Amino acid sequence: MVNSLIRGNKYIIAILDYSYAGILNNFMRFDNHPPLYYLTLKFWTDIFGYSEVSLRFPSIIFGIATIYLAFLIARKISNGKLKGFPEITAIILATSQFHIYYSQEARMYSMAAFFSSAAIYSFINTFKKDSDKWWILFSVSITILLFTDYAPVFLLPVFWLYGYLMKRNKIWRLKFIASHITLLIFGYFWLPTFLYQSGRGRWLLETLPGWRRVAGGATLKQALLVWMKFVFGRLSFPRKIFYYTLVGLASAPFIISFIKLVFTKKPKYMDLIDLWLIAPLALGFVASFWFPAFVYFRFLYVLPAFYLLVSWAISSFTIKTIKNILVTLLVGVNLFGWVIYISDENQQREQWRQAVLFIEKTAQINDIVIFEFTQPFAPYKWYAKNLIEAIGVTDSISAD
Image 1 (cartoon, rainbow, N blue to C red):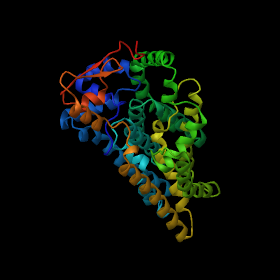
Image 2 (cartoon, rainbow, N blue to C red):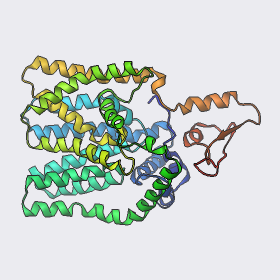
Image 3 (cartoon, rainbow, N blue to C red):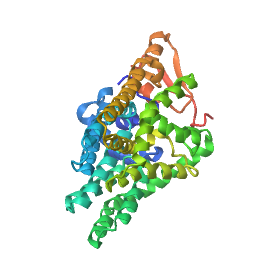
């Protein structure tokens, strides 16, 4: 946990300044996410306190639990017939710099990755064990998922399409439809807030056109960044040739694995994993022609699918030496990316902790910290010890 809390962490304001009702009725009207992560964090911090470690800990728990769910999904798919598949999946996901990074950042993306995995796992079990408990778990998972973040809405068509292609009996189809009722009920009551958020989002794009580039869009750069971040982690370097060279080298074992995947017969449930990875990315990219939504970190919830496919391909090699070399290379790439991140301060964005410490150490009597915003940014307020006055000097985000 080397990086500071970042400016986007508005949850700081939510948990400090709002009650549960206040989060739902007031704060969420000015945010662009659903409420469940904020409510979860509020509940957590009311019990365990408001330290930086406490704020990050739910994401850590969800990150670890996602690894376990990916292991269970692999075990369920292989059914004991593909040795090493579950273990390789768990190892390379657990060492992924991209996964580790967002599993220690106090944002909703780790939580979304967990519930997308839970939805996939329970959905698979509705085919193998037509038990009501799996339908209940599936229904709860997709409801929590969509109230954790909006981006995973692109996962829903995966279930619809796969369920249609599997041509199940009438009882299964009725249970599948019924599993969406909880989501529809909560969605109905949340719709007015969502529409208000959408209206403010349109206003923001009109007021600050550059925000579209920040929020993500349907561009070749954003599409390439998904691959680069999934493969090499959340890293970048000023010397782009050096960075692209590292990404190219890191991509080699992944490319070999995907080539193997294309030319190897897969069990039927691997088609679901294909859809889990491809459909949300494709739909998110297309949707971003109308509203900005396509940016790599919003798709952390498909990362388990990425590694499941890679792991299955590696496990399907019959030559043990090749299998061991690929696993070693993948783990090596993952750990190399993590070492770069923790050892290079330039990789650690928005160092608010250090910035606040510097300001409060060097400030003179009667100095004032001024923000070109309506109020001091949330991370500044979090780390500040109130040794110096800080104010916002604009009456809107457009700095009028």
